[in-house]
Amino acid sequence: MTFIKYEINFNEEELKGKTLVLPTISMANVPQLATELLLNNHSNELVGRFNNEGFIQVAGASTDGLVTPLELHRLKEYNDIYVVDQRSPILKSYKYTFVEELKKWADGLNLSVIILSSADSASRNDNDIVSSQLKQISSKDSRYADKISAFESLDLDTLNGTGLLKSYYGSLKNVAGLCLFTTEGDNRPDAHLLVKALSNVLGFKPIELKDPLHWEGLFGRLYDDKLFG
Image (tube, rainbow, N blue to C red):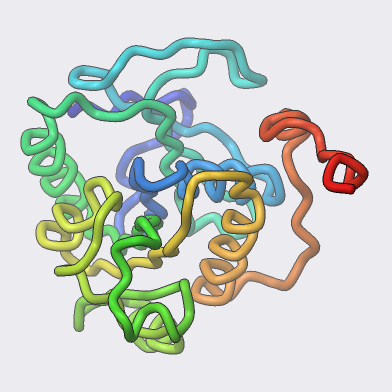
């Protein structure tokens, strides 16, 4: 995995000691929705892209030009926070290599990592069912261990649909994670919940979150109640 800077004036050394928000490709794509919601509500800039070896290829247009599978944004108001925007899953045969390369890159820059993930609600145990759908994990050396402990702990052994959450957590240093139990459907409320939790952990000022314009029609139009009598 190679980091390719987007800004001519951006030096990769600027990342040292900063915080990286890292979504997984997981249940109902809630982390991707949360990433879009986060970037839509905080002024940010694209600072780099990662090579797309091992990813299912995607391309498209955006305000920053070409959209690629894995990009890195910096929040302007909170410029010690960097957000990974992942639009494409990793090929199964490349997952181990990708995690190892990501670990090497993150460790070399001494990044504090916060993973965003989601899990299949059907995989919950009895305790999970009667408690909050939002859970957390944290290593002892995480910068955010105290703040994230306000949420209930996650049992990694009982999860389905979390993508690379276990691999990330088992490999990366200075790592914490937020995981939301969910099901497929209109997952915009889940994205709001995850972003609000992340904002509390990172110490962001409270704001009213606004959906990206391209979410209009994403989950279809609202049904007419008269359909059901």
